[in-house]
Image (cartoon, rainbow, N blue to C red; front, side, top):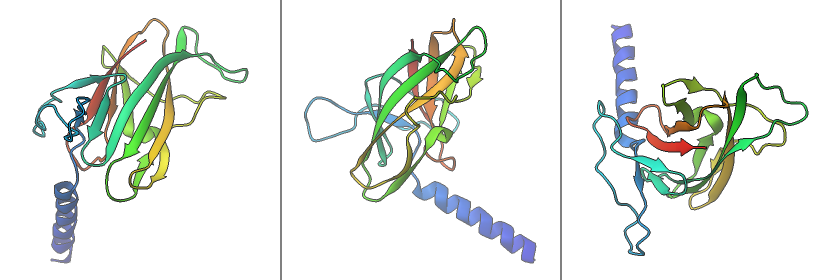
Length: 180
């Protein structure tokens, strides 16, 4: 009975966290100057694919928590002490955030991001000396943050998708189409 009650308690905690969180699926922000900040499509169901991919330079709201802009995508030269596999290149992605919630929020660096090529191959973040750090840490309500991600990818690859998932308990993800 004690084990059953523990399982029920765990289920309730996960259910509450999922119910009161925000969707991970982003919406484009309107630049028309009206007072409504979000436009776009309805939130997809848990089993569907995101309805919209975004491009670099677009301002995207993630729930009522973050406003994110992928501002720059570029090839990054290795530093003097960096080692890179033959045939690979570093891909740098600069981004800015704004906490649009009414409370302090936390960014988890590269842990919330996934880069894939057109075949679906996933790439891990790379450390490159003298390259800006990933967006990380506590951000007060209304405050901005900036950071960069770096990935080691095949030099011949030019098309990728970059996915952001703010909360693993919530469905969806926000995806940008990345071209170099």
